[in-house]
Image 1 (cartoon, rainbow, N blue to C red):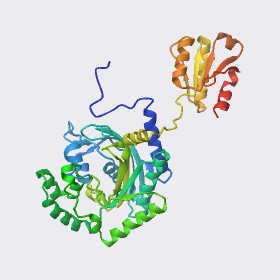
Image 2 (image 1 turned 45 degrees about the vertical axis):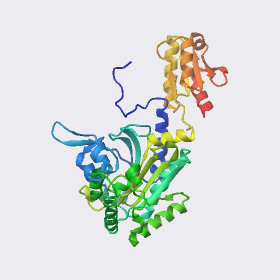
Image 3 (image 1 turned 90 degrees about the vertical axis):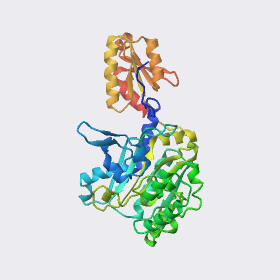
Image 4 (image 1 turned 180 degrees about the vertical axis):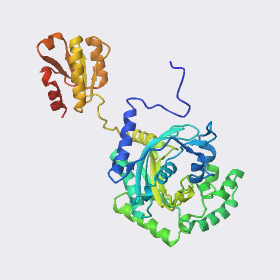
Length: 420
């Protein structure tokens, strides 16, 4: 046993389960790459102030969950708790918005960190794939991202997820709603911290998961009743576009995402098979975030989908992913000459795109064949001194058990033909 274990609330991805995570990441990324989104990768940590300004100083993420630390040089940094602020910071720093092609369309994949009480589906280290479209205010862009996320989930075989949709208004109509909501919240029996939050950002109170708070919010004013004409028209066009694309959704007038930067379109992907941690992803429009972090006005929209929770959703539905074989051919040499010849053939197979492995460590036939079975290879190539003297190797089909002699110089072509 090792002296060390993974930190509390984290996990290791190890074979064979890690193959599921790779497949999920690929499935989410595929429709993005097919729609003009380029890959971006940002550091695992950023200046604390980036998240305090962008995510919101009153949010749980910033006040309770962020892993913040001070460097030897006195810089205040934080492990990234989410992706949007980092991606927008990188795009602004590289002046991508000045290249002439707006929106700047980017996708990313990586690990994120929040100090939370660990439970199934909620970890202190988690993985997401996200997409951001920066620099355009267009309902079609919001619709595109919703459609691409729906496409990604359906390509995985998921069917029991729901899309919740709402509009949070903009700087014209939200202040009026904010005042009405604050007046309502002041009349409730709330603790001091919650009342303080209501004064800073009352919409955050609507996102409070505590039953004692939620049961008092039944008669809370709804933002949809305060939307200006422009926001109503914008939201209606988003709804019409995704409906025309065959994407089902549910209007949720109480949906409030837990980050301060959202405006207008906001949405969440939920799966009812995951218990209390039902959200598998979400996002929305964040038209003012660029200005919050010192950039120009760049209306933008994006989402992030949780890889961990998507895997749990697949398991809840009993969906088995079709994963590529890690090994298609396993070579078993018997003797030094066979070891040299088969190692060369394995190298040639790999160069030709065939997944091949080799019996290392000088094992005997019995031990090597056990390794071949464990590898999951469809074919095993066995060769000893007598085989090589005759110019052949033995090719065994691990499914049927059939074994045939194949010329040493023909084995690569034979395996290519059999494996297609």
